[in-house]
Image 1 (cartoon, rainbow, N blue to C red):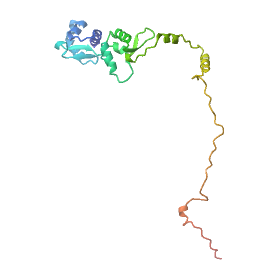
Image 2 (cartoon, rainbow, N blue to C red; image 1 turned 180 degrees about the vertical axis):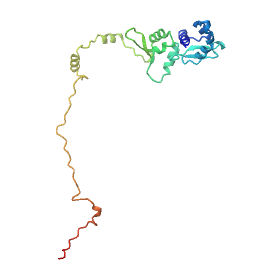
Image 3 (cartoon, rainbow, N blue to C red; image 1 turned 45 degrees about the vertical axis):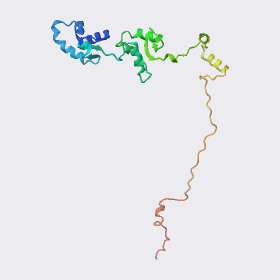
Length: 217
């Protein structure tokens, strides 16, 4: 199984289909382990990170590394992004898993305005990519950009709040006054609309009171 790991790493570095003979020669298996050749081939054929094509390379059968995303060129990347049903973006790290030259192509596509790219602050390496439609780009005059960047915001939040208030704007940090309703809500008194006792009213004809007869002397 150690040789299987080495074989998968070899396929990942090649970025193209290769024959099993190429893999076997790269591994330089010792003579006393030549009997494991068939086991290694079967392991690679069913490996989840390997694409096996029994008819590839003119019928010789080919092996190729299977990346997270099946993308290996700029055109494939643009087509792949257009097929996405969400706007989550694609991780550049995952793209590089099976595409060693991904970063150079991503940089070029970004310059052409065909990709939106976020980068790591530490080394400026691309982190995530999204599709971009150049026709939606809005040109801003250089004079306006220069004027915009010359505007300096107050460093102190309280000064910024004061400037907004002078301009007739309401700062989001302004404390909102809570309006208290004067007087407590009057509690409604429950009125019993039925007067007298109402217990066992359905037995009134049975419980009728009769006058007591005088006792016999």
